Length: 398
Image (cartoon, rainbow, N blue to C red; front, side, top):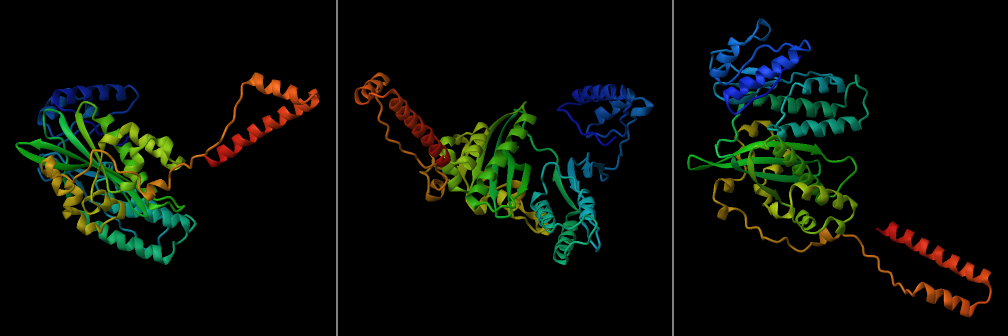
């Protein structure tokens, strides 16, 4: 059995959760071992009720970290640490690269500006159609070795584990979305007042590579906004006991325009995504952020690993988030009219001139003009055929 991560707001609740977990898993022959916690009260009380099969092991060394699923946790200093060690040497193959990169465990996406390179690299590697155990092209080998050397330099990166500091359970979540020609990204930050100061910390992020089939930058920006909405949905579901004020930021005015109108106004690609976005993040939640102040920009384009530890825009968001709302970028309460770029995704209107008569009048006119029932039936059949063909033309244009 692998590691199990859990927690609670109080030691008593944590003890109760652990007892339930131990009981449920032990009934099926799974015995948890090597407990660790940042609460000595939890460790002391739980160890008294633990059997030999659920013993507690806790180091008193304040500098020692526990390794959990590849992530290092210092329970005394309350920090997470990353100590990746990529050690591949040529010849490189698909199998070896995937095996080596699986050492990196980053569930919250804190290293997204670096790991996005790996996702882009995988896509390039698969396009070569190289066999699993055949050497990869030399250019890709050089790219990987260069990244590997730089990535190993972030061994000493540590980040605070505790994000939500306030006790009133009312905080702000600020999400940022961005895209480049290679990938798109979303990042969420927690903003709160603590001891008279405004604290901002990176909460979670996610990246995805661009589709192999080329997509326009505005559509990629929309994919970034869509990714942000899904990340928000996951975070809000996980932290459902907290009350959040939610803000979503994008640098794309075209995305702004798309989100300002009903999804049915746009073509299928835009309509489907704006519809899903607005279920989580309605129009009123969206604001505009300048490109140079958008932290998601870093994740969508990537950054040299040696610069990541000191990249304050990534770890703490734009500087104005630490200021009062009056210092935030000026965003109009209503969205701008659709720009030319936005109108390119607008459905073309089909105009039909329909002349209708009451059914009885039509039949009466036919009998007035024609004496042959066969001819009248043939005319009605032509009318029916015209109506059917008109519907086909309209559906193909929509």
